[in-house]
Image (cartoon, rainbow over all chains, first blue to last red):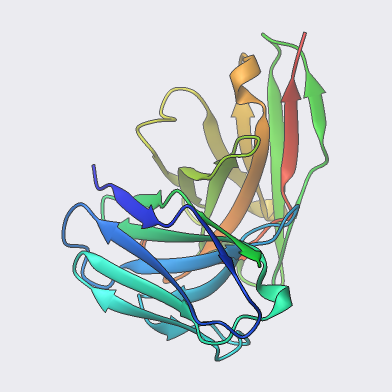
Length: 108
Length: 122
């Protein structure tokens, strides 16, 4: 099975900071990597698909990059409404959909 | 507008059966896979399985194979997740979500239901 290692598990940052979360796959997954945001008590929301594509309607301060085994999610300038838990998720053609452990983002 | 509307919260006893639902609207329900995702209290997201309502092709995560049954009734645009004998460890929030990039079971979950909280307690 493909394992997804997401880090850090929690993160505290100030408004306006640049925030980076990483996700590492245990084997090459090409660009089959998505990022979701989950606010407390809410369903997850798709932000980035296929490693670097911004979902329609998502603010441009969110971005993703990477391919193969190493991926990065970035918020260029943290806003108060970005407080949430972020998950990476890989997919393949078996099919399998594996989520990372999540990164809880808080305001400092 | 694409919507997935899930059935309401449930409180059950161990050993009881349960079927929760997810009704799709605003798109061709038979043309997209629907997935189910579990979130145990305070924990992360776990993919359980997916179904293609067009022909009821169903794929399960190995972790959930044999533990739950996923089905769909395309005549009423509704997918289901059911248990025959609940355990306390089934206590969780369950989400349905639409998988894009049909007809292949690939891609990302672009629309999500609001979640159904299942509590199993004696």
